[in-house]
Length: 327
Image 1: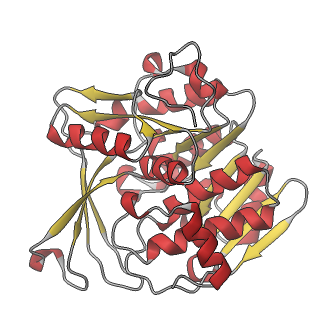
Image 2: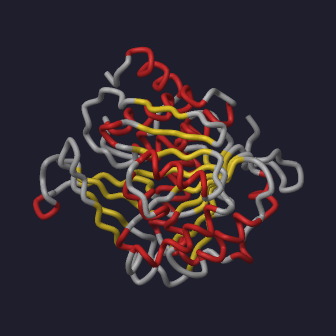
């Protein structure tokens, strides 16, 4: 594999995946079934959806970079160190003076209750990404460019995200719908910006709540059809315990049931799904194989406490698929 830390800007091969969006420190309780008011011990992890997707793809052997910004503080230093440790190129991770690196807490109530508490005040550094800072050549050349709905919620990140999308003329461009209601005044505010991004994307990925924000439609098949009508080539709708639905412009419809798993922490499962989705698309697999593989990667992370460091290796995904469950 090419070493991203020694390549010159003029000679490196295009990245397999470049993600752009949220980064932060996840402080997750080391006690399950306990409210935050009672938790006494926490683990510290690299977090943020776009960043977790990058780590997931890197764990599967892909050459990956992430475009984001942190604060000029020890947490920012920690995040860059973690990215390098996970094999993700951090050359496009800038710093913003005067804004703290975000911190996110969660509560862990298995199997399906994991409240999140975002501390991104007064503003998250990753929303200070500006179009003039972007390496548009690298973004244009990447085999997959992955962006998120959170990047559209404020300026200058919104304009930078659309500029990055506009630089793409080939390859796979994934819009992770990534709806976080606390980042928007109201759902209607998001819809025109989601529509603008969909015009540039070739793949849209989201859960039922997220596809409803993007399309106004909640029923999975209808929502997938609406995403295809908006211009994407592949629509992927994650349905939690009902599995995953995928539809493409060729008329293929794939429905994959969930892989049996004892859930410890469902947070991060969608990001593992995303990194594995990228891996499968780059491998050129048939659609059903791609979705089954991504589904298994997500299930593995759901069985673990953390997010980034829980991202599975290919051997672990293969083992889960062979067993028909996460053991």
